[in-house]
Image (cartoon, rainbow over all chains, first blue to last red; front, side):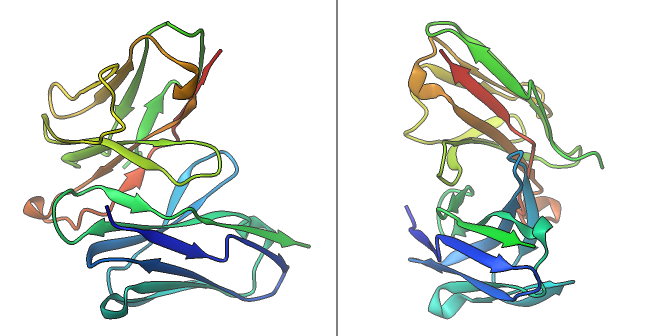
Length: 110
Length: 117
């Protein structure tokens, strides 16, 4: 299947700082989603972004499908942003399931 | 829209026992997926349904695992003769397929955490 790599694997930020999380994928994709997994394990949808740029409050995301990467920007981080961020892609052909990266664990300290 | 729900949220069982989990998708969604997540990893696909038809099964889905979606609404995932290696979070997701006007954006339930002793 398609390979999805996320970087960095771990990130520690002071509250108020900005950060950029990266997702690289190895093949063409139909869909790309960013999720935040909270400490209880719930995956929360952040963005559905197979291409282009979207913004939602302090979060924004950009996917450059032709270069096979996506970026998630978090500005003015808050302690509630802590958790694991996953990028997941649906391949351009075949199955409709999502392939997940291994995630970026973000810790925001006050 | 009440989101995807899963039951139970936690299950502790002894090795060799059978367990069954339930997933209720978002009501208008016609696709339903099961994933498994182990500690420190991203979720991995197990199987998916479009309406009542099971269309894809991962190689992770051994013959001890079976999933059903009898009326195209809720789904069950059964694990027979559980093993300690089955301990994981089992996640369900649903989506609206493009032929129903959707984009296949997947929404996840809270998961069922299985511990096999």
